[in-house]
Length: 166
Length: 414
Picture 1 (spheres, rainbow over the protein chains, first blue to last red):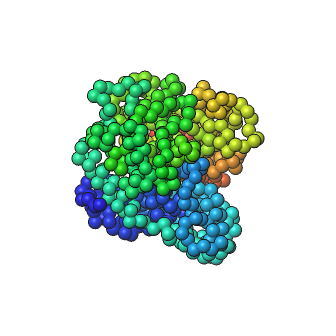
Picture 2: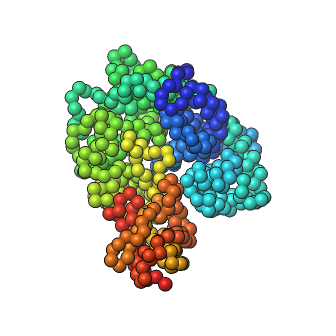
Picture 3: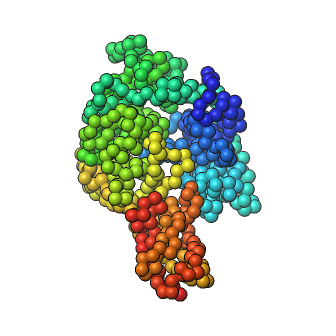
């Protein structure tokens, strides 16, 4: 069901373009962060609705803006005490992914990271952002990005192949 | 594991989670509903023509499940079997429409009974007045009453309980935002609430300062955070006892030191997407009611400011017109947790109390300064004639409210 998006933020064409360009990226990122497919879809939907309502990325880096909003929405879920207790129905490791034990093991390790380290790893390795871009997106310093990545790499026992700069 | 392996694995794991056609349709549906709201000039929730008293203020939420899911779940049947009015009798046309998908719908058993549960909080009671199904939407009308006098209670989650299996299902996130929306809240100490009043307006009208989001993700059941008229930060927290069923907790008193996260709401009572988040530690103890396993309301903690994070400030006169200011952070707190704090104002005064310098310590409003760094150095420039010969006072203030002084140091220049 489509409708004319006249006010206040985006046109229908602009919203369509955003969903075409970033829909999969945001959903994948949120799925990795939240470990839940349906929540990831919800967050991605809400991100685009916010984009439509505010047009908030105009004049900024739209990709960074959308990622930032999506991560904020993921934080809303993480803040919920019930998020930790409620049985979630499709954790990442049970999604329809190639049934490789190694993938499942890595998924478990990533899901086991503290929230901020996990976000840094996902933005760096999945979204392909540089430390500088992550810093700008999350509104933190670059040294903080490095520190989070280093902690995550240590916990995941990642063998570095060329430093942290993307 | 090699970096390339991690990268490729993440891509494989994320691949099935592409943005679905259903999600795309849901976006258009929400956009359409938002437009409808705009067209209706965002008419507020109103269950009765008269003004509602606090105790009876109604909170209306709308949960949407897809028609397909609904037919599978038997919600329609449940409504009919339980004597709920036929859909056409429902008066929902002048109610603001909030829509949710029931995330766990696919797992709900057919024919199960549902109710909304308040989790038995001792801070707030929630009575479900009606639970109705209409055209693919589940409508819940609730009465929310606070039990803690003077508290401003923010209801922040809602869950379904399947009475047959005892299984709980949560709808989170969106509920928080919408519950803060004008007209959808019922809280505070017994005034009449104008359904059109926003959280911000309410706080202003009742002598509170700014309304702040206050999130703690461990143990906490209810909380609120307000900037009081005198500029102090007040946190009220209600803890749930031992949710992980650990065995090494004392029976009656729980000591906690936990990170908390604070952000200012915007005028609409929402947390802005690009808001500054203040993270600090909350330390205290909570007496636990042995019967309810929840902390006592009188143990809700009032913590003013966050003094003590800065261990010391040292000043070095670099030249006739430049002074270096180095902030050393509290070692213990720094080691305990990575703390972040929005940049305070720094004010430099001479012995006579004249302000020599005043500026945001960290200029980027949106940046968060990690206090976990060993040192944060800030070079400030003072005009040559302004550099005092002997002592200066450095005061760290809340960047929004100069009456809130975090720490003050007096130093003799080298």
